[in-house]
Amino acid sequence: MLFSKAFIPSRRETPVDAEIPSHRLMIRSGMLRKTGSGIYSYLPLAKRVITKIESIVRQELNKIGCEEMLMPVLQPRQIWEKSGRWQIYGPELMRLQDRHDRFFALGPTHEEVITLIAKYDIKSYKQLPINLYQIQTKFRDEIRPRFGVMRSREFIMKDAYSFHKNAESLQKTYGEMFDAYSRIFKRCGLKFVPVEADVGAIGGSSSHEFMVLAETGESEVISCECGYAATKENCKIKKLENKQEKLAEVEKVYTPKKKTVEEVSNFLKVEKNKIIKTIIYKSDDKIVAILIRGDREINDVKVANFFASINLEFATDNEIAAKMNSVAGFVGPVGEKEVQIYADANLQDAVNMVTGADEKDYHYKNVNLKRDVNVTEFVDFVLAKAGDACPKCGKSMNSFRGIEVGQVFKLGRSYSKKMGSTFTDENGKEVPYEMGCYGIGITRTMASAIEQGYDKYGIIWPITIAPYEVELLNLSTNNKKLTAYCDKLYENLKKKGLEILYDDRDIQAGVKFNDADLIGIPLQIIVGNRNFKKDIVEMKLRRDNQKRKVQIDNIEKEVKALISELFREIEE
Ligand code: ATP
Ligand code: MG
Image 1 (cartoon, rainbow, N blue to C red):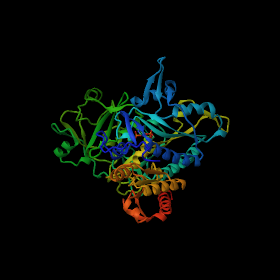
Image 2 (image 1 turned 60 degrees about the vertical axis):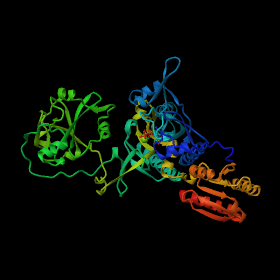
Image 3 (image 1 turned 90 degrees about the vertical axis):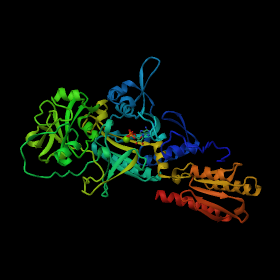
């Protein structure tokens, strides 16, 4: 491509609303333009990157027997009613009406559509397993679209759905998809970690997220050197230790105006880990009490999952007073009969604890859950943090930030049951399929490659997804001989199958250098007057910015070899 003919509207200014490097650099390098809040146009450079990521995805999925299809973006409300998600998806689902006042959703994912297709057209175990995917624009009315295409309201996703006769078959495909995802992100040149993830609103039994390591990532991942890694929301920890001592008698103590764990701990001179916090939640319409050790936080996601809550919030002071006959700030579990009490599993062997006494300005000391409290169930509710011991090996865990670029889910039978999608098994019985679903954010993957590859001058693309492989800079377009050489080199390299952007513009060399570094094509060939007179051109790898002199006669061979080497580094 000739730069003079290309649409690459680079800019010097940094856009004011761009908070992270990938967003800034995509705007500045002329890849991306904002059309509305969370809505973007992908200009030619971005489109080339997207096409490359998509083609890696296609190759790896086709290799394991997936088939590509395309489903509608516009989906009638009725099918969303069938799965129950018209109600539970919430405001993120883009809804609209047609001229006949019928409601529709713009697809945020396609479980409903595909499960209904399967219902009518996959009728026998003999047709299973089947794994279908599409690459398509998705819509989510994100509460806070931000970071450019990292969290936008319209974005490109690859979504795949698999159908199985039993759980073993699902497990096999899940494993194959997991491996295909690992190859896809490796081939995109990314540093990533698969982590155990929350199953969230989609439901199902197990899930992994693929996290690209980056400081600007919105997710916190907790991981151990033994290989265990999970999102903070989903992380398990080795059980916390509680100091053991002889059980003492419950004692009511005066704690004037001391409400928080901090205040009570200081006032009574007890460690925070000897205090029990009683937190009252309202899960949909049900009030429940959750107990957690005073030095720890509750993980709301674990709570919402345990109660299968659509809406989880804290109970109000009035609700606490009415339902529990208690006082906010002094709520405790002793003698509670109205409200069910669930305790974090780490409290199971805790002894002689401090709790609220359900009376203004009073707490109890020496509360023992087994003796004094009617605990319905001990459940893992604790929010993990760096430094906690690994649930697998016991070593101290670390935390890091990550960008979720893909997720694999075992859905099990949750959708097929709700939507009545069944097949006839070997015994002639109608049974719902086991299903899996698998997403990759194509446009988010593009942005995350920039989060991992940039410097103060601009983007540094991995060769496998770079918009072009080589940029040729003609620094002296008014030198006829030099220009004729560049034109020829451009044609020859193209013939060798290289993707090359040729900066043939009649502008200052400095602008060309800046643009080349900003756009971030992995290899630059720089042809300038002084070197050219000595039959020399320069090569520069964008990632180290070191220039190397090369004899004109050798340049084609060297470029070809270097590009092959860059591919080998990533793909082998
Ligand atoms: P997040 O937790 O970041 O909101 P999600 O878990 O809701 O994402 P999935 O339903 O798993 O997303 O969608 C599959 C993939 O689509 C994600 O792994 C991510 O790469 C991409 N994706 C999801 N939401 C967005 C968005 N708003 N903008 C860009 N990409 C997105
Ligand atoms: Mg996800």
